[in-house]
Length: 167
Figure (cartoon, rainbow, N blue to C red):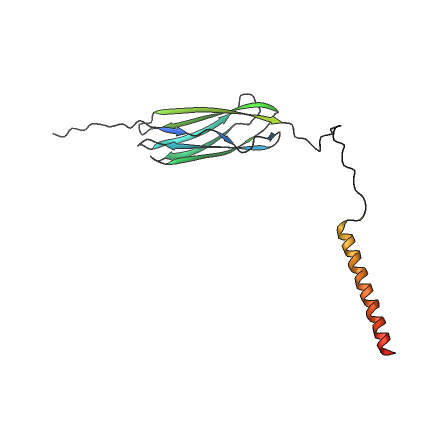
């Protein structure tokens, strides 16, 4: 007789910490959010999906579908989140995946970032007075004038020399 015993592999996933492209985030700017999903088990992960959300409303929500991640392989998460308000926002990452039987699993992580108001110009500080605007000739104009004067001087010198030889 033939006896078959079904063997199920428990999915093992290791997710790296969330990394932001910049710690200085300004309103209206996109921030790049990155993470890696490593399949450390012996079974394929199916329908891997990563969703980012922020309940405070500072960052816009976004989602990325990675598909299947083979055993021993990695999936790279690389998304841009837009900013829509100033203040501190908490970026929540929800990773969902399935095993070969269709059972769902999830992993969550979060990080926070502060979004500043974008400054338009230099900050006025009474301790450091603004530099006065320099007016006058630029270095390019000075060099051009010197070259023109040298050419005129050379022409005058050569014409005088020809006149002396002619005499």
